[in-house]
Amino acid sequence: MEPIVFMTSVPTFYMKGEISREGNFVKFKLPNTLFMVIPLGASSENIPITQISAVGVRSFFKLSYFLLGLLAAFIGFAFLFELFLLGLIILLAGVTLVLSAPQCYLVTDLTSGRVMTISFTVFDRAKAAQAESMINALISERIDDTNVRTHTDRAIDGNKEQTDRIIDAINNIKK
Image (cartoon, rainbow, N blue to C red; front, side, top):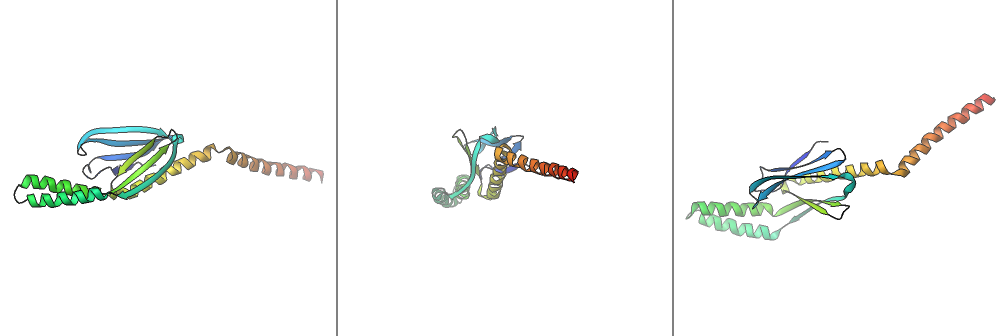
């Protein structure tokens, strides 16, 4: 399985998060930042597949980010002609807020009751859906591996065929 690499926020587009499988574990590697801009390394966590109970993708639109971003962009644009550097900074902050308004999260519920929420940019929404389906497939595979009824039914079906062959052989000997 290939790792899924994604952006966690618009201002830190150059810092990537990663979700991958390592044996019976799902590995989450996420960048750490200060003030959403300054990189501070990354955090990594390996979670056993058996400890994941549910995975889902949630998308929504933060109206407050959008409106505040529009206001900042207009103020920054107005300052551009008088105080260029300050206007440019405010304009970039406003545009960043507007781009951050549509949000997407991969929500992973663990059997311990802990909920992991991983932020994706709106541009990587398809990767969030891909991560969700990958983790759900791993959960399904694990459930199938530990389902005693399925294995018992398979063993019974295999034994039935073998028993039928033995009975046919005995009947052929008697004739």
